[in-house]
View 1 (cartoon, rainbow, N blue to C red):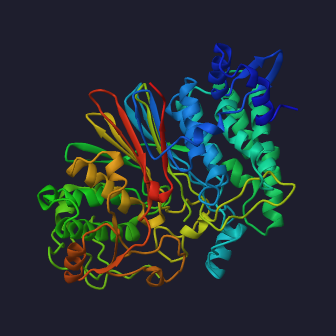
View 2: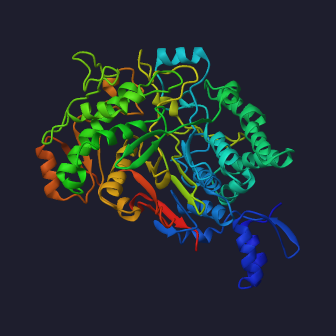
View 3: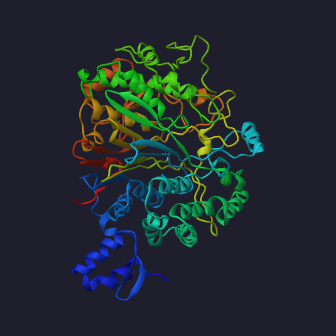
Length: 581
């Protein structure tokens, strides 16, 4: 039996100020096997006291982490301090978030990841989203009875575990044992009934990694396969059957984390990178291309003109999202046309400077028309947290871990792997690009962002908030690119968002019933009263939000000096920390 954290602290308390103790603490944060006072112990992943000193902003040249709860930020920092890179630290942070931010993210859920690899100066997408059940009878059941919003029938294939292993294997340097150490420490100190069961599952993966001969990559693959193809998959299948779900072991065996190229657009000399149209991410790129035809800088920050223009552009991007986006493995999404400059100019021509639109107006990117012809459009009948990491070598990761509630919680005797209900982000509407099919990924709202300048990363953004995610991201990008704000100002600045779109979590076959609020506009409480009145005069149905709109974190990197600044909105419970210089 390994010592608990309190027992370990007692072992070294007499040497608290010694040089040996300081060395021990450095190795403790690395999660290494260490020998102290003649005893071999498994070091806890990080000192929980550190989390007490983590705030909402930080800067360093050695590495930064911005995420959800402070203990998950501390988890990522511990890996950076021990010599791990951004991918290693991001995995440690994500695994810890499954404990600290449970309710916003679960280990049996999903996590899209963007990785900038400094060695080859490329950005790649790790498509951490599982699909619907493969059984055609299950799909027929959904089409007959509708897609439920809760229970095991609403669960997609769990993807987060596979995505974490893919990040370590392809871009990391650490073992799964090291990356999982902070999460295990949290689980061992936890009080929920599922904590010891999930800890046991993670330790089984570590056991496989340790006992498998071969390279680091082969060890990681073997551990990953135990979850998706081995005895853990057998246990999950038994639970699925007990719960009346449609997932089976063959769904787990068929799952893979696809490595994809990002969707990119240039905006004011910056390259904005997003995940593909199996997320909502590309519509942010569309919106930026529309906005590039306007002079936002001359309008000024937080003015009625700039907010009105951004909101009207968002409405157009969202309309195309709802009309065209779906899993590109199953449907053709006309991204080239949607992101083209000619189409952006056509769509921009629809924006009236003094009048808010109250219509859903998808365009015709293939026919290159600003609107579909009259009668062509028939409206198709979150829990999330955040993670951004940058290391001293120039690697950057932006991830958006999520678990769509309500969770299917694991009962006693299972692997402790709670599942989310992401199948409810599909629908059963005939002809819709996001219609449920065997193995199809839902079009999800999760949408991390990386921004490059001359092929070097300068911004990483992750936002929690469902359909608000890219709307909040747009605010951050406009604040940074147009108005020169750094993260600590950008994440706290007044935000705005519209409900002029379909609800991504409503699987109603009649997509009209999924529409949220035509002409609706929420603004932060810090917006000037005069501006609110001007927006109302233009026809916006304005409501002043009582709390924060979305939960953003952001990293900015100075390309000249390498200095990194990280921040998370403290009003939304976000945190950031840095490796000391």
